[in-house]
Length: 169
Length: 437
Image 1 (cartoon, rainbow over the protein chains, first blue to last red):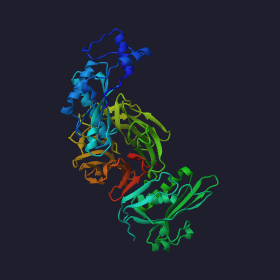
Image 2 (cartoon, one colour; image 1 turned 120 degrees about the horizontal axis):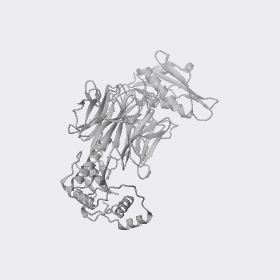
Image 3 (tube, rainbow over the protein chains, first blue to last red; image 1 turned 135 degrees about the vertical axis):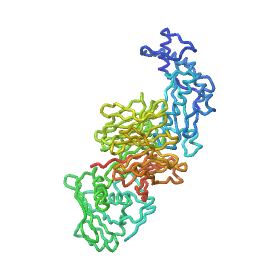
Image 4 (cartoon, chains in turn yellow, red; image 1 turned 180 degrees about the vertical axis):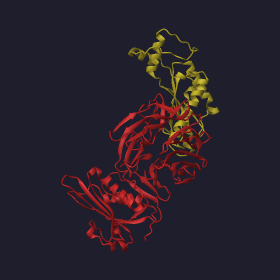
């Protein structure tokens, strides 16, 4: 499990430059960040950003993967705390974005699993928005059964492959 | 009559082929028709560039309808009409005889002549002469197979047709380009790469005239559909990742494409006009609707939906816009595709925790299982009809991470495997072209 995520430097640059432009945001403010004009990041700013990019601190946020039952997309009780931790983190850091990847085990057809993975990713996305995270901070993608975490043809592999992954860029 | 029950017969492809491909008939039809295919004579400067008679023999054997006589059992090997002694073949109880020859012409081309004889009547049934280049000799061989098949079965042969499939190569040998989309001849020879990608390539499907190939690339930003033009060797991206589309299916006239939009956890079927790129929504349901297949008469789409609780097949009627459920047997039924005449669909049927290939008669809605995944296999997937509807090709996945192409006759009698050298990776999602001439 990865404990430190890479943050999308360019995006952070944009938000920081917006911040410098006089729009002071507080933690509690609405997560919606509006960019009115495209801003070109300059090299000096990139250096500053690299120093100031903190990794998520919360232990639960360090957990980046949750698992599903066969052909199911509802979030199991044992993983709700993890999703909530990510929701809190994203709400507190409205300039952060996350991509939720939905994955499946190999059973069933590729296109069906593509749809099932999309549903799993959306199920996580929905729980995040219900916790107050802005939709603009979340994107979803399905890889269906194409990118298994564990190669194998029984439940010992499948259980690790039916998953949703939080990817901070 | 010599009765042949070909069980575990191995056939190794003849010289001239680099791929070391092996076709194994794992279960054969009782009463395959004996036929003698005499090695064609050759006159030319060097060795023959292709072993045409061996290709014909392999084609006919692979169909399961014919049992080619082993060369060692032949009492004579004539290549000219005058040299045939029909008694030699009657003794062996072989009712049909194929002879031929190939010559190198002064311009470097090759002329191939073949003749099919009825041994008991001592009469020529069919034959032709064709001129080709080194690159077209295999095609000429498949056309000879088609002519023989047509003459003896009354049905059109599907040997001179194409396949498309995806190969996933092992990470160790191919770290950067793991997914390859290929086209190949129907015997998987003459393989040509269409696309290499680090991203998964899925759902290749031929346009009805087989001049184009649609497929999906799955990126971190989402799925998009591409259309590859075989003749011009160009690809066009027709959907963009702001909206995620997958599961392409051509309309019978090739002007529209059914596809699936993945959005907000839902999967719904749309139809795109390929000229204007405008899309129209077809299904609107909270459940997963995917894997559309267009009926050859253009009147309906068969698709997979889990609106009833598990993935099953449904049919959408364009004129009434009504949806009816087609499958009720089995835990799951998915990924249908039509036979070219529209009377049947082939699909994946789940029973006992495994996935097998089945067909349904569209008139009676009767289901018939064609394959059963064995103990070493995990699933049979992506079945696709041959253009003459004689066989269904599919991918068989093994427990040891291997995936190979396999085919089964529509009556379920003949089973065959196409296997590759070790390390060649996992072969997936075969799609059989239409007739090419």
